[in-house]
Image (cartoon, rainbow, N blue to C red; front, top):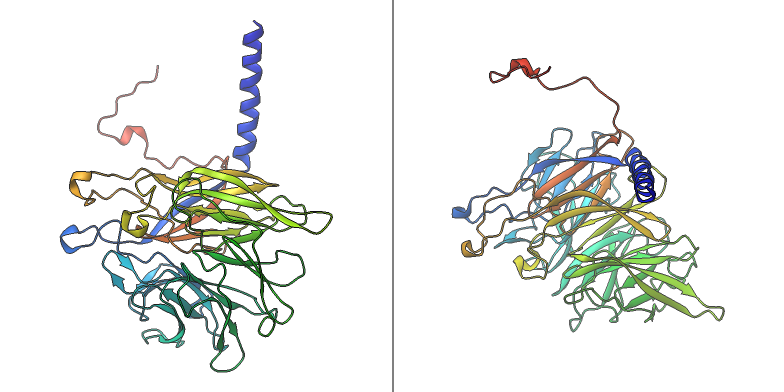
Length: 440
């Protein structure tokens, strides 16, 4: 009887707990905008080639947020596809030469342009000027050259109130270094600065590490302290930590994020394993003598290829949540974890506890005898190399835009569970030819 009572109490507790969780659980419904055609005879597959990055911007200044992904842009609200609006982002075998992109008004004319980088044919970064009219090719201008280009992100690096650009190289190459590009108010609009060679590894990010109000640059092996005059003064590199992966070879996500995870007043660092297993946060501590240290704390060890991560408020509690997921067939299927299930997760960060919520999860069909020319799975949603979070349908709630080799998707916010009871939408049972009444 005692065991039975304990069991009943447990069931009651779980029911209350689950009910509470369900009541606060946002519902995100994935909608496919575009994707590759599975046509192996013509070297097109469900796993690409397709752009793994997207930008969210109002292309045509009509008040709606549109989506650009590689060489195509999609016009809201019906997502009409406009092909080849810009150069760059060419296909190269199974890949697309677009490893990051974002929207930015580079020439300050009131129209959003696009900054994009590529590692194959592009070998660097370009900005593409919005002409303000449909059907006109966007002119591209080179802003950075590199032989190991991983990507570009944006943030206010010099503290003047507008965004600059941070470049990332996956390895140190002679003649290259840690590079940021200053956004100025006259032509050529963008000016390059190289601050050192340390930390020239896969993945970097921006944020205030030491709480002085200035933007620092974080890498997977330490951080550059933003000086008072970023364009003139020396950036000092601090080797206060080194990111390690759970399994596989080390490469950090792009971007790396800076955020006060445990709400102790000190900014911490969030890093995903881009080509191996693991997702971590680095807890920052400062001793009474001012010594700064970081402790690596695991969020995930059994999932891999967190190539990109992003943060914004998803559940309406006023605090940013974390979104990430698995990149599909990085390095064309040569990475560890490549044939694990695809996943897209968001995490409610509760003072250091990362509560995982599943957006999508899909086992991949893999038949080795067919050399990966496999049947196309349904809704193979892959988080590629750039995530976007924005209110796409103007309902006051953020949606999630993901672009990977499997296609372009929007996870639309559709309220919270439990949903209010609505009128039954299914056809009455009696309309089915096979229906036989079974009620007593």
